[in-house]
Image: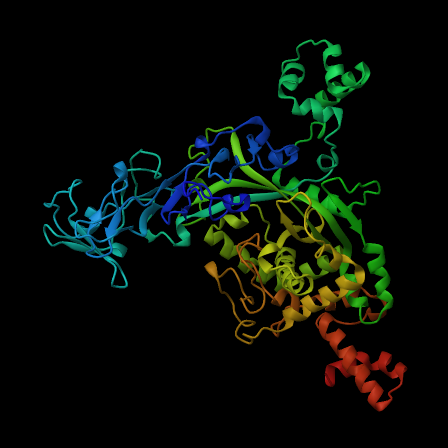
Length: 634
């Protein structure tokens, strides 16, 4: 086996093992991955049919796959590779603690003068604007003296003592010592381990020494979007696609508008002259988007439109294939136990196939709140490329009834609770919500999404970390939908375990159990009565025992979650099913807040039927006195 190379999945390169992260190589050394300027990039790495996504996200760069390679049986590299560099460079002796500044230079043996083995010091200095460098250990040891002891780059004179809770650096020459947690760097000899450019920090920038396992050292920023019609319907054998993929011809005909001889390309593409001219004209007119300009909000709006639209002529070879179950789901309203849940849902769609583009925007260090501190994949932003990957998968989409939501959203108590979330988000400057309008429906949808994910784990067999969410929330655009999906790099996609749950008879059970899950938490009443918990108090009635999911499943850092928006409480927050009941013609006179929750109604019906069988109570009594009985008996 060739230990000079290590394999990494595409998905890992866009997350914890991406550009600027610290990972362990096959030789057990810590290394950091260099930026994309060191990549060998060819035209065939470009990800096609992403114009809508790039325009919506304001990206004027090409999206490319990371270059790939493999190791054959002889240990030889086939293809290309991504460059990394050993970091941290500083090492210490496991036996005596002496620090060596850079023993990797000139391939020196990693041995101390005392005979002990050298090991990388598991600490580095980072700043809030994205810098990362080896710690100036001399400065740490002498942080409390007048600086008469001079730095020596040739000899080992500092000792690293990690036997205490906080490591201490001691100078053998003068006896000075200092703890690493009390030293805050102001100077970086390198802005990144592979970029020899020194910087002095100003007072606004934070810097500190962190353990290389600290999650604050590397916080990746990525964006995901779905490929939808018309781009998802494009065939690779389409003449227009063949012209677009022929860069030489595209530049000549479309960009530079050079006259050409059709005969040459008629033979090349095996088409007639008219077909060739029509294809070229179609591209000039804006194929496949035909001149549309998109904004970030439009990205979700267009996805929502695609998910709620029936495409009768869909083909399984397309990248976006859906099957609508809404009509079949509405038929379940004839079943007494299901009618309340059926009224809540306005659309139910099985997403049999989807294509997701995940873009690596860069990374943060220490904190991810300030947009200006994002470090680009090429560090300085001059490259014309952005790393990205495409994933294929399946999912379930459903939306909530707008009439139902609009009544509920107007309640003053709901508005006040939402306002508190808004205030906390504004105070926290959390970048996860920079493009989110915090409305009651968003908090409801996000919490419900997590509850659905937890139930799908049980029903589908997928691990929680493999499920993802997309929240479509906008009062202005009448959007109130949730897409729960899974995706993998294999073009064949996943195994169908998710989309099967979109069948009406399965989904009604899934939704009911998810709502039941919201009613009770093993940490109640503590969890339910929380007025704030989590980062910047951006959760209320939500904890790991009830709502919080795997970090990779949540699009919003496991924040803005609150079960009270579903279950209600004794402070006057209305319960959603009460609003739904008011929309029913046969409950016109019922008051908001006077009744039972959807899932409790379902449970009470079952209990009452057992009660009915036992005591032979007549059915007309059940129908007439249902609310009274559930209120006082159950």
